[in-house]
Structure formats: C-alpha cells, structure tokens
Length: 218
Image (cartoon, rainbow, N blue to C red; front, side):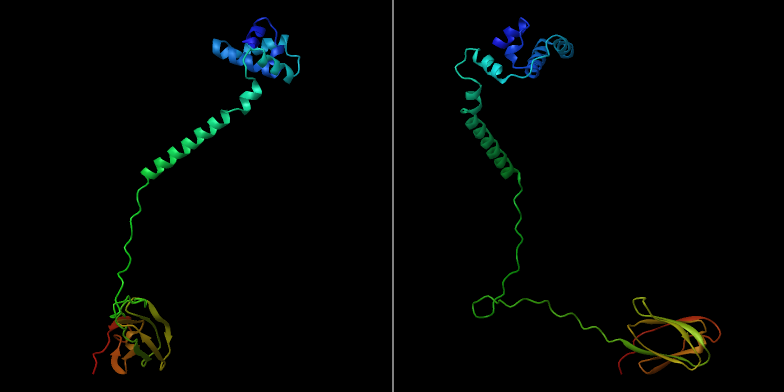
C-alpha cells in the first residue's frame, strides 16, 4: 500500500529503481485494464533516471506496517509448506501409476520332469531327433553323342550345375532328388542315376528337359 500511495503522487523512489517501478506499473495496468505500453512510455520519458536501490525496496516493504518483512517471507515456514506439497503430489502420482498399470501376465515355465527317484531331473531337456535326411543321389552326365550345354536343378529348384559338356566328357554330381536336367541338345547327353543307365535327356538335335527321381531300393 505504501508503494501504491507513493506512485499515486508520482513518487517512484519506494519502488527501488526503474526496473521495479516498471514491474509495478505493468501490474497496475493489468489490474485496471489499462494499456501498459503507454503507461511505461510516459514513465520512461518523465521519471526513468534512478538506478535500482535495494535499500529503498526494503524500506518500502517495512513501511507497509506488517510484522514480517521480505527476509522472513523468503526463509520461513513457506519452505516446509512447499516441500510438503511436492511430496503429496509425488505420492498421488505414484498411486495413480500403481492402479493404472496392468499386471504382468505370468508365463508358465516348462514342467519339471521326475527322474524316477522322487526328485527333479536337472538334465537339459532336448527335442526328439528329427527324421534323418536321405543322402544325396549320385548322378553322372555323359556327352555321348555331341557337345552341348546342360543345366541341372535339385528338388528345391536350385541350380546344381550349369555349363557346357564337350563330346565324351563325364560330369559327376550329387543331387537332392527329384532332379531336372535340361540340355540344348537333349539327345547328346545320357544320364546315369546311382549307377543305373537312364538314357538320353531327349531327342538328338533339339532342346529338352527330363526329371529323375530316386530309384526304388533293390
């Protein structure tokens, strides 16, 4: 009240300097609904000359007639009130998180296996062995009639061999059946599967493809 009364008579000394005086003017303009910019411009033109004086600020505070000044307000029991408020907010936030969080689902582990002696078998459990894979099939290509280019694919369609065969050349492969043999000159190449003669791939002088499967066991 003392500061406001001083401002009403154009006495800005109790404000403690231009910085604090401008702050008081902004507050008063906001409360009264006035234009703060015009008010500050008028202040700067007429009164903005004095530096900040901390002593005058303390004197203005003490002149209000209250029993507690600025120093007692800063360092009193307000700190305890602030800390208590923060702790309450933290506890409330923790409680909300506790009730909103979904409980984690428990994943059942493997059932322990008894070892036959009223105890638990500690040996690692292994999956049963898969069915053994059949061995690869031995195949021989023979360019018996003429040179030609051949392509051999396994049962999965992967290329096992691709290239030329000159006249009289033999090419031995091991393939996962069923295998497909393609030749540019199908009659120029004969095929042997596990030692058994299976004849030419096709007609002589024309391209052709033939599929071979695993022979039945003897």
